[in-house]
Image 1 (cartoon, helix red, strand yellow):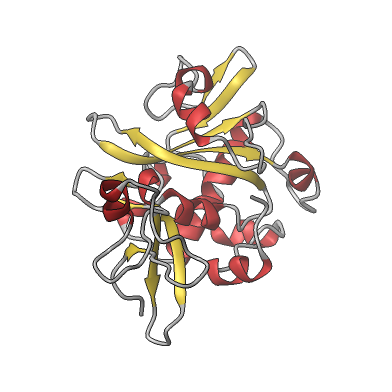
Image 2: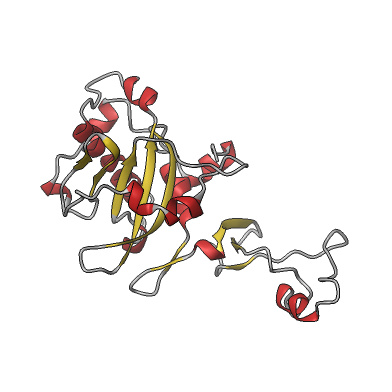
Length: 238
């Protein structure tokens, strides 16, 4: 069981002593025990003493209930299926204007085509297929409601990338309106004249949507959602 979340601090001969002639900046960068905490990385520790990177403090999402969500944790889970090439979780809004967890993802079209039986073909079928996988992973990992996706949207054009080839979160968030289709409405699958995103509202009850059951996913050869631990052991694409 993991201990409480906190800032990751580092200390050692390879760590700077402080900022040159800037005592205030140095004071803010270190804690009272001399650990450098200005890196902004968040982590936790389990009962065996192992540390886990949980995300970046600046990317933290605070839900309407005051719960903290770290996008990197959700992104790692979603990327554990081969049908999602890359993904970015972010702070969205539900029908009531309250904060909810949203995600944009890039589909791996080649992986979809390799499904041996009854592969989804239309945009609506693909959206429902991906949503089914997401819901399956949420159930399998017993995620609390605040960590479940409230809205998921598929992008057609690739994500902008940083020099390290990570999804450029700042660029996407600064231009989010250009990614989300104007025709997006409650409970509907929207298209933006064939451009931009097709999206599906994941906060609509499953029995009100065309959905793939776990049994159907398994029959299609698509029941491949390894645990976060397994994904971390094999690395990720970002």
